[in-house]
Image 1 (cartoon, rainbow, N blue to C red):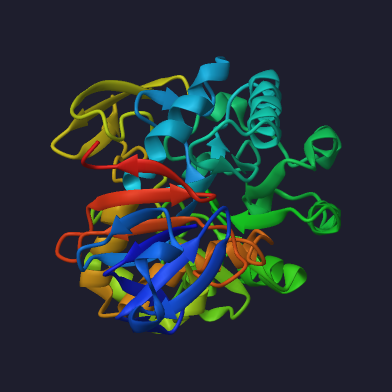
Image 2 (spheres, rainbow, N blue to C red):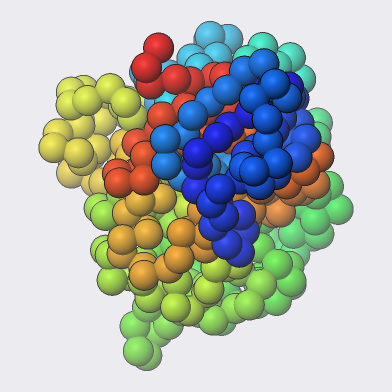
Length: 384
């Protein structure tokens, strides 16, 4: 048996002190410190007053540490898996780009293999397809020449691994694509879209529940006479919105507005990071296009803002500062909410007895990651 002691344990609705988490592969018990005896466990982690939170779940990430989901290299996902625990992430959904169909299919096959053949590090939960079924008008850093009209037929062989697909709803020929996705358990996420308010609401109503890919970014904005996708996302109760909280993609005030409109249950914090995350300034790439990273910003050669380089622990801290939300609420947006959406909350996403021991320990001052445990094994230790 192993134990984490002297930490502020963050549960979905409260923070508890003076308790010990006892675990092996799964969490066995969370007990008051006075009921714990040293002889009950063979290994200890002293949290030294830090926050003990569930391992973060990143549902939108292209790359980090020099590796990218679209790399035609079996080692790329392994590199990401080994690097992510240092950011507090214990599981993730590798995200593809709008590239040639064959490249996307190969990426999906590699993601399936990484999911099924787990060899340590952050666990792969499935794939997020960001395109190619998007709008040229709001393509962002996606390659326009590879944009396609939505067609479920070529996705069907990969339906077991695709967890989320980003879609511009105004490009649909009919709503059968939406039903096909629902029938196969694939989350439709509205994004990279030129849809107007009515088109967005119509799609959201048809789905009942959906995601919105990086709210505010690459979509029709809110205007008092044209509410756009942003207006629909903030109003629709069934829309759960991703937010990139690097304080560059979304202004702090817009983050606070999203929290006040959507509440804790309506937001999911993501990084949308590219391979340059954890790499520092310099030239990088995303979706076959050159990206230039300088002073914390990643941009294409034409100046277009590309993906983020912020790690998840910083995203969580930024939102905590900007939103005024409680720590349990903010942590839930990076743990509980994605776990529920992805259908894995029965085993990960919160610190509960019987769930997998995916645990991150954060410094209580600046949220840097001190230790990360995945399935009961120490995956990152800042002192190592």
